Amino acid sequence: MTGSKILIVEDELDHGRELKAILERHGHTVLGPAPDCSSALELLWRERPDFAFVDTHLGSETCEAVLEECDQQDVPVIITAPEASLPHFVGNRGSVNKPVDVTAVSGAIDRLSA
Image 1: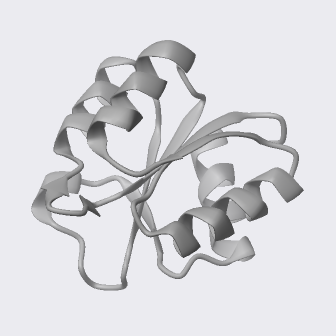
Image 2 (image 1 turned 90 degrees about the vertical axis):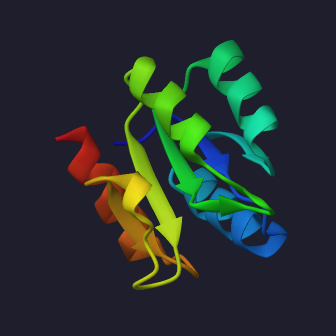
Image 3 (image 1 turned 90 degrees about the horizontal axis):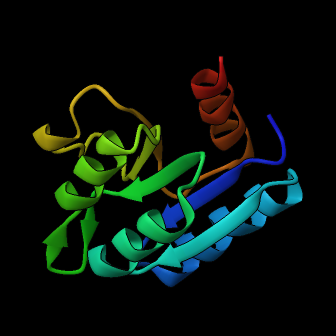
């Protein structure tokens, strides 16, 4: 699915830039990367994205508030995290390993779009 509005919540600048570049090359509009929960929540309230890629930990905070708001707004979430380090609060959401790659990102969006 191209042309989606996608929020990136990522505190690591390199990972955020990489994911943004992949998504924009595939025709998506990117919101962010938001480096913390408050920035992410502001974008969610103002823009209501079609999807969100959310890092599990943002500096010293976790992304739980962002995940809850995504759930309330029915915004599907793809978790981004290093392999095998998914905390329990992400539930059964789909994930892609960091660093992200084009195939994993495209596959995750396709699964959520189906």
